[in-house]
Length: 121
Image 1 (cartoon, rainbow, N blue to C red):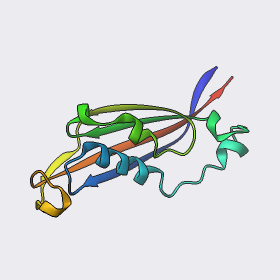
Image 2: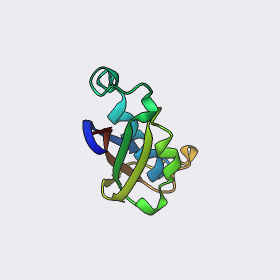
Image 3: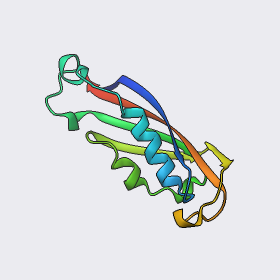
C-alpha cells in the first residue's frame, strides 16, 4: 500500500510564561488543526473510521529534547500518530511574572506541520 497525503496544515504556538517547549509545541499543533473538517477522509479516501488515517506531526521548537511527545500527540483526537521534534522556532524576550511560575523573561515560539495521509493501493 502506498501512502497518499490528503492535507497539510501549519500552526504556531507560544508559551509566554513558564518556559515550557511542550506547551508551545502542543499549542502549535492545536493551532494547525483548530479550523479543520476532514470530510474527504470519508467521502474521497473511503475510510470508515478516523483512526485509520495516518497523522504525521513535525514540530520545530527551542529545546526540543525537553518536549514531552505524548502530551503533544494528545492534542490530536484521531489517527495513527507520529511526532518528529527538531530544533527551531524562536526564543523571544518577554516579561517574567513570578506568580505565573516564570523562570526568566523567555517566551518560546514553536511551529508545526500536521500531515494527514491515507493508505491507498
